[in-house]
Image 1 (cartoon, helix red, strand yellow):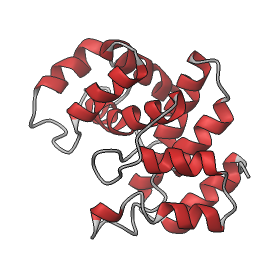
Image 2 (cartoon, helix red, strand yellow):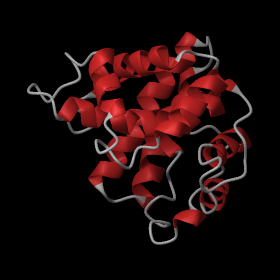
Image 3 (cartoon, helix red, strand yellow):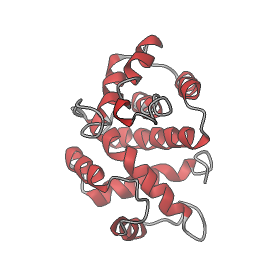
Length: 188
């Protein structure tokens, strides 16, 4: 089954109580919907995969190597489609999962999971505390500062852009565009 957005969000909230984790799920969801449209794919399917991608995050924070390993059972129990489950598993490739992203949906999720955090953080340090006036050059400047958003794995983002066959600058710019309409919903 491919759940509705409401069902998927309810499932995420069942296992994740921290507001920041819900905001992250919504950010990734919206970026996925945006990229699905660029690829002429199903934005609902891609958005649901983005929304559910970290469903086991709070359950695995003490054991991060288990992230992406608990999720399949939770999602199967809820009757979620195996394509979504595979995408959720693959977003942690090389970090906590050996499931390699194999299609456009999975490659995009792998890439933008990390990237959304960098972009949101870059927006929050602006005087406007907004994405409305955030530009690619600002994100690229922050990218070079390794102390900025230290937890964001820039190498994963670069690898992901390569997997997507899209220039890194384009991936960053499209993600900025994707997040602007939901900045209030994601806590900005």
